[in-house]
Amino acid sequence: MNREILGLGIAGNFAHHLEQAGESADFVDIHTEEEDAPKGIFPTYVPGSKSFLGVWPFSSDTIRMPKDPAKPIQMEPEVALLCEIDYHDDHSVKSIRPTHFCAYNDCSIRIEGAPKISIKKNWGPESKGIAKTMLPLEQFTKGSMLDHYSLVSFIKRDDTLHQYGEDSPLATYSYFYEKLTDWITDKLNTQKDTGPLEDLSALIREAHYPEHTLISIGATRYTPYGESHYLQKGDTLFVIVYDHRRYTFAEIEEMVRTESLGACDMSVLKQVVKGVKLIDRVDS
Image 1: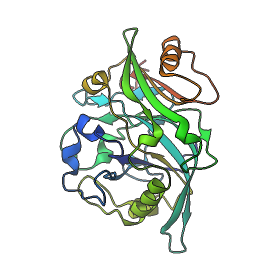
Image 2: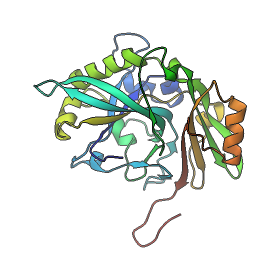
Image 3: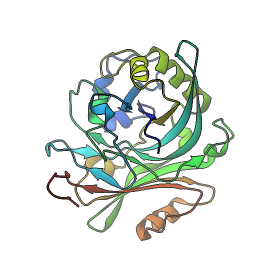
Image 4: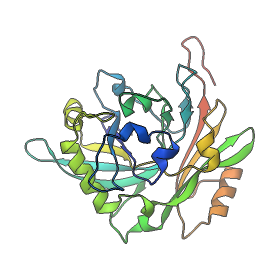
């Protein structure tokens, strides 16, 4: 994937996820236009940045534990959109156009009181998950192919498979299709440094006005197991975006159990959780 893309994520775009993740208090002072509107956009990767956001965090096979063992991490199963960005002459964002979608793990540190969301999102290389397969989008409108896609996630621990996130149709995101892209475009131009959120225009300028952005559009709700279990070294994680007209949940679960996920019409992310990579050895 082109490392000149801008990595972004959306907070609060699926009902009750923030409450499950213990993050609703972070947004108590953030006021939205509608009750179910997302809370804002946060950066995960800013090409050329001199801060921690300049570190490439994406991996298709590994999640690395943070260096501080006291910081627990949790999988956040999502769908991500690869989008083209169109600018006005004054460099404000004119529009974004989703061209591809894929399974994504917006893996997060669970710490209270972090000044910015981004601190919990990028703690170094291999702190994010993106599927190798990106599926092309002809349209991002109601009535298109995404009406028929769902997202589900699992974790395999000690050879036992557990469902981690609910099996959720993509169309049940709070904001989706044109409503989502219009909202994103507005926030890219207007979101300022407020509470846990950051000035997006400044980040776009720092990234030298990239042509593409990868946007994870929000984590779905956890199962009781996912809500109560943080990740451990040795866990195997699965996030699957699939056509629910062609596959049942039971079929997807069996494919995960047997690790026979390879159909061309689904996007599959499989990652193994590994310890901190030390300079003098490779930690597997």
